[in-house]
Image 1 (cartoon, rainbow, N blue to C red):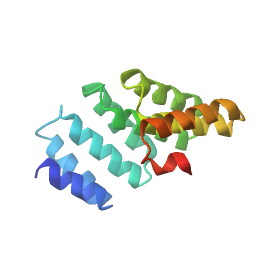
Image 2 (cartoon, rainbow, N blue to C red):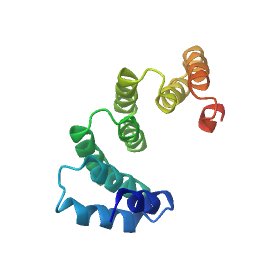
Image 3 (cartoon, one colour):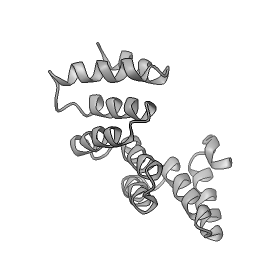
Length: 139
């Protein structure tokens, strides 16, 4: 099984199949950050947030430059009610790439929710400038 199949399982919403495929391959490739990442993404899709976070943190430990993994850990932190931790993960992504629009947009949403509207507007505008195609920023 290759990365394309795992990616296709994930993107088509076949989270259980994707997770099982990753877990099977992790027996022979325990240090493969891609497998940990997609196992975590699958668990996130299955709403198993704590397990998802553990897998994604392992992926991050193996590859601390993957912006999507960092953002997903932030998203899980937000889902389980830890806004401060979520913000720290989004900021960590921005330390790697200051123009990573999903993290900027997520930080803007946190600012908006906390009532810091001016900061939120600045961040939303920055996210739009970084990636005008990111629909969630406009919403």
